Length: 128
Image 1 (cartoon, helix red, strand yellow):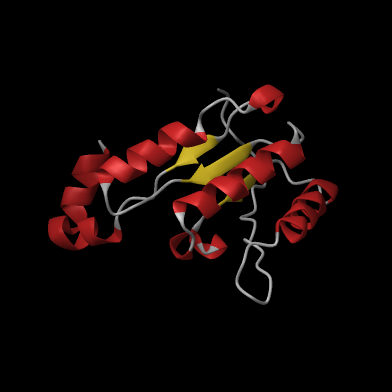
Image 2 (cartoon, rainbow, N blue to C red; image 1 turned 120 degrees about the vertical axis):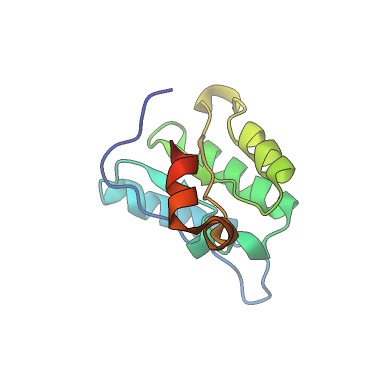
């Protein structure tokens, strides 16, 4: 898997008025990012309401994104969770091949609570 470089906006997750996913709206956002010459797209990040989605809804957004983009842009999926086990499972699912559309990159954000426990030196040491 090659590294992602360039401009990678975070795509918002689009909802209908009843708070259901609006997958047609999601596709329009993705087309807008392609038309705007983005180099990649990040989905399911904090800005994308990732913490308000069920795992089933997350899978719908991922599947819709991968199928609709069909290789036009690399996709990065935020797979963070307070549980390391769940973050690992999400990361593995994100990287599964999706038909002819390839697979997504996984991004795990370091837990914000770790910095408070370890302090700055501990975080830097954990990074290597």
